[in-house]
Image (cartoon, rainbow, N blue to C red):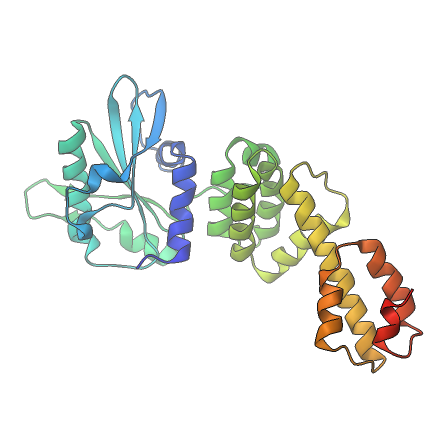
Length: 285
């Protein structure tokens, strides 16, 4: 069963089909035919083959007709079965679409990328499949905001491949401006992917940046996140003061505090918390 990370990586290509072509051309140096549009192929196209021989995603490069079909496979661990199924994907798509086909394997882990890149002998003389593999050394490190604005999915992929390294914080900071130009639902999803991909230091730095007030936010998503982060900070401070003074916060009081959405109210409660004798006094006028 595909993992959440597997599906998240595929979603980047579904949302931006041109990402597959960009990786082949820019990261892997593959010459592509001229095309006007990149399309993520519908599931119906592959339903004529057994489930075990269905590719993760197919991207078609179109002009007046399909010029190239890119079979996109996300690989998070070695799988010997792929040595048999990957050639099937290519020959099946070539027969269906009557156009050249290419295999792009996205493997964020270096060891898995090396495994994926091994030539696959089919047994027929001269018929050797050499997958195009976008591993971490091929996925670009996106650290400039203008790059993220132009291709936010590529910036998110960069974070997923390099977020644990020393460039994690710079990549994450570059992603933020890219999130401003997309719908809030997709922005939340991409932000979660980035946050889950960062090391602890990069994650802390990004959260500090978003709460500092020095970054200009445009989207509802960003404003909501910053407000939520500040609320959580104020609530944690309030509970810490109450507990440090030995005042018992029962479940009812905790729920009432958690339900508050006004930062000014939290600040009033904090001022009262240093002198009250019971938590109940916190809520009295």
